[in-house]
Image 1 (cartoon, helix red, strand yellow):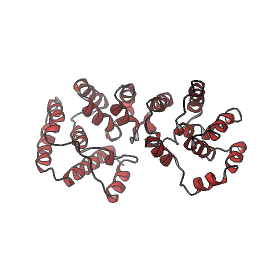
Image 2 (cartoon, one colour):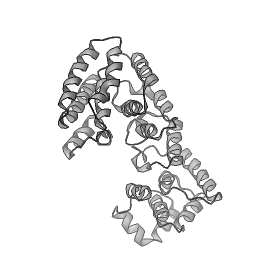
Image 3 (spheres, one colour):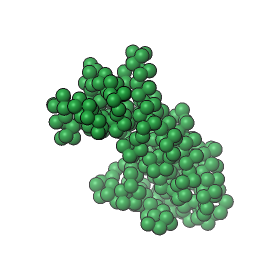
Image 4 (cartoon, helix red, strand yellow):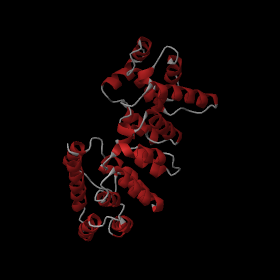
Amino acid sequence: MDEQKNISDIKSYLLSLLSKVEVYDGIEWLGEQKKRIEEDPSGLKLFMAFSQSSRYFKKDPINLNKGDLVETEQIVPGFRPDTWNQLQAARVYLLLHSPAKEADQLIKTLDQLFETADMHEQEALYAALPLLPYPESLRLRAAEGLRTNITSVFDAIALNNPYPAKYLEENAWNQMVIKAIFLQRPLYKIVGADVRANEQLAKILIDFAHERWAADRPVMPELWRFVGPFMTEDNLKDIQKAVHSDNNLEKEAALLACSSSDLPAAQKLLEAHPEVKAKIEKEEINWEAIGERFSA
């Protein structure tokens, strides 16, 4: 799809979502700001409207139906506006009307917004990454955001966001996953987790598990998701240790990891636990279910 047409579709879609929440004064205000932003090459109108959006929109969730989600997937695969609030959607809608016509102009606009952005404004800006034009040019901005100490800002990039899986280089992706584990974030909300799993990340996480065990600390069950496809005879003993854990959730996670491995010994280990294997085959045990139980 042509990039400009896609941006137009995204703007229309966000406006339709906001129109459903019946914030009539806010919708009228958005229409006025849209015109001012598009007619102002300096970007000043955008900066002002971006900040003033909180006067018209609340941090209430956006309620989407199945039809909305289907349309979302067609516009931007992996995009999850159902995890946004109304204020985020309004701010991103305004941002998409930026007069910036080239990648360097867009980067300059974003840099200026970030200079004065509060926590909630940063969340909106980072959540917008998969919707913006010139996504390849925004890799450094995404990597910078992942270094934040504010959990909600980190989540805006790392969770329910298709940008990292599609555009981050392997080292930046790995660092994001590692930090998510350190922060005990729900890994099942990382879009593209299985597609971007890699051998180097698996090695790092095995070492991390060793450190946790050495300190007599538990290992996050979802960690094994990133190890399973790269299981070897050498690290199988680590999976076996998790399988024999007193923690039933860790045991199930380790066996689920085995189900994604081609290693015969891993499949044999899974076969030795037929009840868990049956639940995995029925998808009663999956990474989302394990993540939700761990986070509960």
